[in-house]
Image (cartoon, rainbow, N blue to C red; front, top):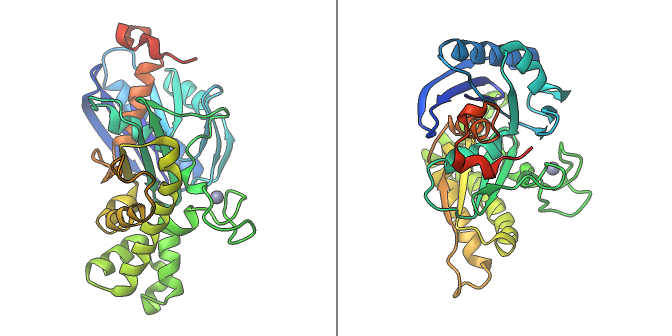
Length: 315
Ligand SMILES: [Zn+2]
């Protein structure tokens, strides 16, 4: 089983040993940490009671996670810090639970059915900007577990606009749904309704042909493209995915802006193709599917580990 702890809802899937989704469900929550955790536990318990055998449980969460202790170290979205998420859920649902960062889980979910092991980069564009990087089919965790926090690659000098991460000038300040809504408000794009403006409203306005809204989305795409120009020489990716609520809605505006920005500064343009830029092909359940795949892989239920996966086991 895989579950996804999001800012407004929780979702969960049951997958068979081949990674096929056999059941899925979701439940909105009230946006508080307590409400989100209660909904998550209820959803997992419900799905477990509907299954016949033992279940390995993986949970994707927005924020920094410690895979060894199962702790949600920091989640700005749910205002959770040093939360023993895996242990708490384990006790509640009576099954071992592992946790993973939601962007990493999304990339794993997308790659579940990949036939080849491309180097891939994922930008998760929602309230914030998350990221994931996969090299040779393996999602990078980094030395301290914080690899691929792509939203916090700086685009400006130190001391410029402060970022919630503690640094300044990060990509998140230019390409998150929050940043997009903020730009629209600053421009007075929606007049008296501007307090309730969301990134989705900006995308809708761009679709209706509003030039300011189109410009805002284009600037976000260019910011992502600028970050990619710095990542391409390091990782040589074949594909770049845009996921998350804002990423999905705005992909048809972001992709051309990213593509054009990359074309301006692609290193060795005669020698290598530019990476393909795509909207996440799996959709809203990708993180839950990826979390389920991890639970299978990490062997929380021995019977579910196939011979093929054994070499992928990590403590
Ligand atoms: Zn930052």
